[in-house]
Length: 330
Image (cartoon, rainbow, N blue to C red; front, side, top):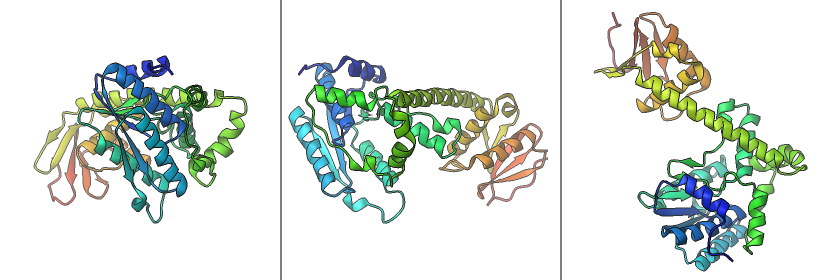
């Protein structure tokens, strides 16, 4: 077995890194994370960087979950890597979306274990990208909401995102790597399992083309989303945002110069930065607020999420806390 990482992996990882010297790999025992850890270990030795791994045992699949943990321990021991195992069996929620809760917990644990200035390596691949895009579209979400994952988002790196699951498994077999299969991936009672069997199985009979097409679609939507976010930042910079004793005031005219997707993105970002909400409001409500920003007559007021209020003047809008009584703008 070569001591160097596969050229495809090494090139993908190099494109995502920005000189970080501490890497943390999320490992589950499955094929994707097994290949990820194997190749990351070779890259780390070649680059002289520090690499550690983290595995979460949610206990959702009983003995199978314990076998996943043992598989992760065996691989980390063989590679001479430090492995942190987090036992999360006590965290299982009594009801609700168990898989979504597990993802949030996994994300929090990875962030807590990351070294300062380091990055986190994830095993998402092209099939995951395509499934995420199709799942969003199947729920009736907007095309931008169906955008794909990025190769890098902050400290999160996904060096396998361009490679299909079949290719990764073929490489694991060629390298003699053992991995664990998660039976819940084929369980139609879970959302992702249902998606695979009902929607994707007929498309996959002809090969990997469907997954690659969906992955590319998600990537294109992701690129469009980033362009909109950049334009939204430009819009916010034109707002002449001013603090006051009762809230904020801002220019209205910039909202007239930008297309609706950009203007809506700017309002969403603005609301978060001014601590008006932590979770994005419904799109229909955001559209109403945008109409108010563009067309509201001087003196008109609009309630915002029960805590804030917008008041229009000729060239500006005031954002006020509803708990504070103020005189109308002249």
